[in-house]
Image (cartoon, rainbow, N blue to C red; front, top):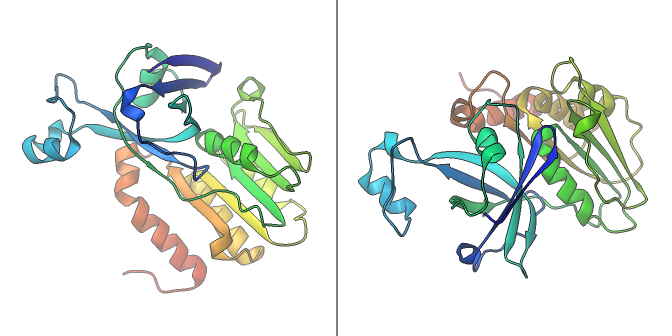
Length: 267
């Protein structure tokens, strides 16, 4: 770890660097992600670190806990990776760690993975998400060509959580301040009432799974956005721990898609 920075009251930036990033590439997609590895208290692993060896030699309860975070930026020349963390006090695992992280710490992760980047051939772009999707949306906005047309909606807790993001002149960024409203409520209203520009839209919608489900239905059925033009997924689920959500996420997404495509659901 080479730098840390408090961006807003609820977001901390960590910049990773060093020889361990040699040979890494994280610039193909704007939703690149890594899986950070946190050892259980009191557990140490042999060096050099080898995840395959750990899974073979250590009992499962001693395997690292993983948390998935978006790569906000990748600097190949400096060999530095920027990752932004949502922080809410002592809540969660990765957030409190990021809030107290110190330069020089060793950070282990798997990845990066990813699958979305804004299509420069699209007539316009729609980007929607809460704080968990903010880094990917920001990276996507900065990747758009100068003549791009787009609408971006990011829901945050308060005006203090807004960030400066470079935008093409034809792209509108709307910060939606949640306040005491349920997560995603403002996003649902904004997208449902949006006057869609004409033409082919390439959409990115991520965040809390409840509002993502509702927006998936709206975009697929009411707006008739083709499935292949829609990157959409629940990054987290209200009331579920990260482990509990990951355990059901694939099946949950499959069931939602079946329902919205009019296909039979599993018994």
